[in-house]
Length: 116
Length: 116
DNA sequence: TGCTTATTCAACCAAATGGTTTACAACGCG
DNA sequence: CGCGTTGTAAACCATTTGGTTGAATAAGCA
Image 1 (cartoon, rainbow over the protein chains, first blue to last red):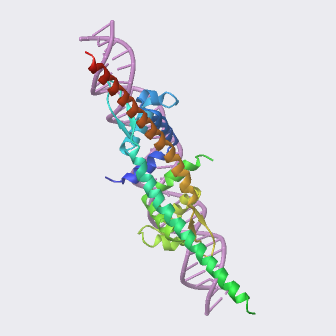
Image 2: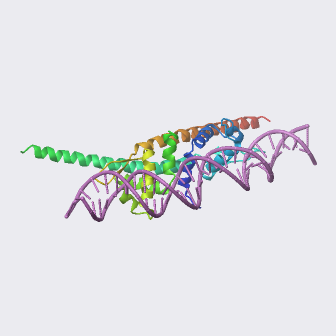
Image 3: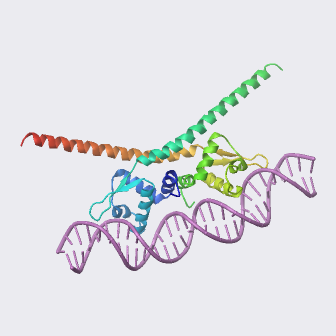
């Protein structure tokens, strides 16, 4: 394996067409042909996009005769939200500490100002 | 503009080095040199990464003499979580509707079974 | 069996990406 | 002023990516 899960998930969702496909699959499962219909790119291009989404763990595929129904694996989203939340929260905490620090400094200044 | 905000944010975070930098900046602001120190790539490569993060709106840079302190813009994370949550929730709802449907079918079968 | 439908595989191409090196700009300091 | 420090810009290179077309595979149907 050359790249980790998180990288593949983020990279997969960096493409607007793939985000579109995810949005479509959130409504319900669909075949490659059904997913390709709205776009004016070849069906092979959509097949490639689905492979990327599958390798990222965002989509799984079953089999129904010639068709390969695609299914959204929403679990992968939690992996991303976990990552994002971790650093968003850290940044927020840092901001609050800075805020408190500035408030303290302001207080100190006020104290000083009271005895010229 | 050739690509939308969301695409740039996802693409920026698809690179492990850039996710590392975000993690580092969540702790506190830092200069390019400080951010580059842990890696064995050139400082120019890190500078490029920062440019990508900046264009994605994830990082902003001030100026302190020769130094250009980098600051994490945590707001951008909300854009992502909003997108993710939207489709995760849709997929969950769909799953629950399917669940209810299957339960109904099972009930119907039970009713049938009661009168042979 | 052969025909049609649904999908993937393979080879190819242009553009983007992540890295390098060299050169250059901005600033503080002696 | 000249000098070291800090960072960006430019040119270049290898690899990846998103697309194409044409051939191959898989399964239902006449």
